[in-house]
Every structure is written in structure tokens, then in C-alpha cells.
Length: 511
Image 1 (cartoon, one colour):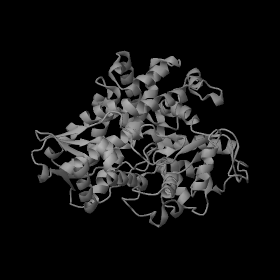
Image 2 (cartoon, rainbow, N blue to C red; image 1 turned 90 degrees about the vertical axis):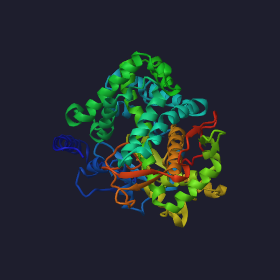
Image 3 (cartoon, rainbow, N blue to C red; image 1 turned 180 degrees about the vertical axis):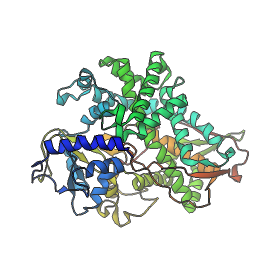
Image 4 (tube, one colour; image 1 turned 30 degrees about the horizontal axis):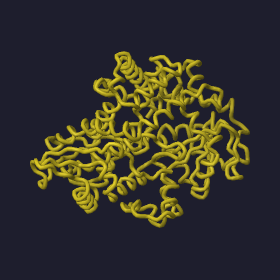
């Protein structure tokens, strides 16, 4: 929630914008215009209070409309909930593009303001040098195949100590435990032994940055209106700069090396690269942490499903050496634990609040019916899609752990069209396989080895923080205290993990 000073400044800015730019701005050929309960500022405040969930909330109020327009004063958001119109967006990918958002991220999230640098980063279709998209595309090969497997191996080694200590703990906060384990494993797997996030002060500064993005992203006097995340961003950028100056990337992942290489060859300074790199961690922890928590919550909440999954993992994904060491095999989880993989995707389907976004770079007539005007934004919230019967059938609102198992080609197409957790083709999250490996390995080990019970004995869903601008998986607001105890079946057993090189990708459904 933003404070009074921020509200006053924001109010003054948007009110001025309203009287300068508003008026006959809505073309009758555009999608139907939807107003908010609060005049002028309603959708702005809705975005600040409900984060990315605001678009889905507005769409649910108008289920009869496949697309609506929301006036954000300086721009408009076209909100789509129709599978057919989503496919029309994909067919118009040249004029409904993700790439301009990379420049927005550099300016409003990373804080880069040098016009020459922004011109380097801007996409070529808009007259820039296209460095932002080049860096993004260069990342993709580093998150599949051997580079992915090497990251998985490091991640497993780093996350295992957190699992080992779980049974020794007194009452602890399960969400905070997921955050600590994910942050430690993800950052060191990415940055290597000189990982700048080993410093707890740097970690805390990054979370100040991430949780304060709602105010920071407005980029209106951020040193005043968003001072805490602004200072956090600078502290992390300084730590990454030191890491790079000392050659930390030489022992880091291929991902880190490639990002630095392309940034330097493209003309950025090391200071500017460090600023850009602050936002990189959003991709690795902002959604992985809550996804990990909700996977554990939803499985322990359903004891019959939990028991079935334990048996599937025991039968198909555990190998035992002659000295009694039990190892969980990541490849076997992916290839021989279909119920676990299906359950994981169903949790993402029902929990995700994603909203794939595109910028209208040129006036576009969508599906020969709706005019989308250049300079505005298209948003496709997942929650309305997850509840559509034509996408998911009569069980669209139910939790079905077998929804993603053994379906025919027709059903597969139907599901893929409405599964937006990882984005909408052609722009799909490149880190989805790494995040899935991290979550499924941890979840498999935890549910096999431990019984977890909330304080009070009841698995009651905690309150979510709906203000996040980047987390689509519902971060928890407050604490969720639990107790963990080792299962008697595996008393005294030593555990390990196994990763088979070259097979790190999961058969995940994508939109």
C-alpha cells in the first residue's frame, strides 16, 4: 500500500494528465469502455491495490464481453478473456509485441535514464539498436540442455541443506522457509561461489525493491515517493557491480556470462549492466517462492492425494545404493511421475494470476472487429480463462489433479490455449524448466521425508498479498507457522538427488 505522500503526488500527476489528455479519446471501434467506481483515478488505484490481478477483476465483472477497454489516463489497457481473441493476438505478433516492455522495464524497474543507453536497448522496429531483445533472446539457450542441467546440479546441492534441517526445526514460518531456500539456491546456481546475494543485507535490500515495485514502477520522483525500494535497488546494483568487477561471473552460470557478454558488446557500461541485473532475480524467485509454498500447501491440504503422490515417487523416482543411500531422480520425476507433474500444473492453473501483456505498436484491427490503437497495452488475465467451460470443460472451476494426464490431441489443444502461467506464445518464460525442477525436487523430497502440520492443526488458506506487480502466484501476507516431523518410514536414511545430463526440460503445457 502506498503512503499519503505518494497518493498526493500520484493524484496531482494523473489529475493533470486527465485534464490535458482526456476527452474524446475513445474511438467507437475500440473494445467497450469500462469505468471504475472511483472517477478518473479508479483503474490507477486498482492497479496499485490489486497489482496484476486488477485486470482479471475487471474482466470478471463483465463476463459477457470477450474484450474491454480500461482508461489509465495516459494509456489504455485492452483486457482479453476470449480464447479466439488470444489466438488473434498471436497472429498479430508483429504489431502486438512484448519487446517494448523490455524498454519499460529498463526505465521503470531498473532505473536506467541515460537517453543514449535507452536508445541502445530500444527495439529496432521503434528506431533503437535492439539490445534489450538481443539479451533476452541470448538467454534462452542457456536455460535448456547442458547449461540448465549444470544449474540444476548446483541448485540441488544448495537446497538440500534446507531440507535436511527441516525436521530439526521448532515452529517455523513455512513461507519464509520457501523464500530462504529458493533465494539461496537460485542465486548461487546463477551467480556461482561469489554470489552477491550471499550477503543477507543484499537479500533484504532486494526484497525491499521487489515488494515496493508498485510505487517504484510509476517512476515519479522515486527517491521521494518510493524511497525504500529505490534505496534497495541501488544497494543490490552496487553489490552486482562489485561482483562483476571482481570476475564473479567467471565461476557463475552460462546464463550470467551471456547476459554480461551481450551487455558489454552492445555498448552498456558495467554500472548499467548491474542496474539491469537487479531485475533479473524477479524471474527466479518472485513466482518460484509462492509457487513452492502453494504446492506444499495444496498437497498437505489433500491427504489422500498426498499419500498417492508419495507412493508414485517411491515406486518410480527413488534409487537405493548398496550402502542404503536413497536418491530422488529428477529425470524419473519428469518421465515416470505423471500424477505429480499433472498436479503441479493444476496447482499453477488454479493459483496463477498471470496476465500476458503486449504493446500495440501499430493500429490493429483484431479479429476484423476490434480496433486496438497504437501506444496502448493488451492484457490477457489467466483467472477468467481458467474458469471458462469452453476451455476446460464442466470441471473448469474444480481442482482436478489428473487434468493434465493421458489426454488426446483434441483435449491437449484445448488445454494449451488457456494455460497462461508461463506466458503466451511466442513469448514464453525461458526459465520455466529451471523453476519447475527446483519446485518439484524440493516438493518430492519434503513430502516423502516429512509430515507437516500448521500450528492449530488446520490447513487454512492464508491471506495473499494482492499488491504485487510482478508475482503472479499469490505471495503470502504475514506468517504461516508450521511444525515438521520426520516420517518414521525413513528414519535414519541418508538422502541425495540425481540429475541426468541433457534431460532437464519438462513437458509443460504452454499457452
